[in-house]
Length: 95
Image (cartoon, rainbow, N blue to C red; front, side, top):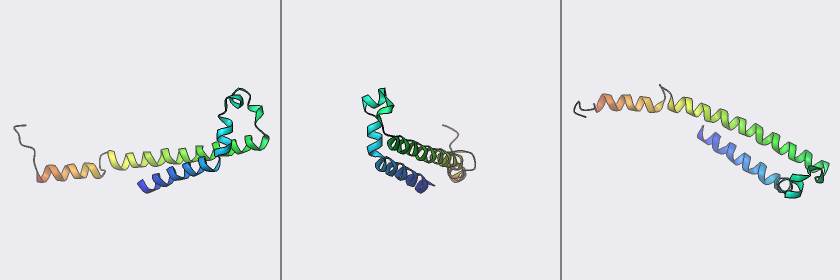
């Protein structure tokens, strides 16, 4: 799952690189004040970029939730390690 998260991160970076020109144009001060300065094609590309990023962000959030469930909740790999550690190395009663 960590590899899948890394892949999603790389895909987001590639989307930013692919749409870098449109993204930079959309962040200009004059365009922020008047979005009509962008051409129709640039607006369509910006919408496509936002859709792709939204999809990747959603997939990333779902994957992070899966990692949380499998790693941190009872029954995950960390809890098994602690159970085994307690069984083989009991905590002294003094501490």
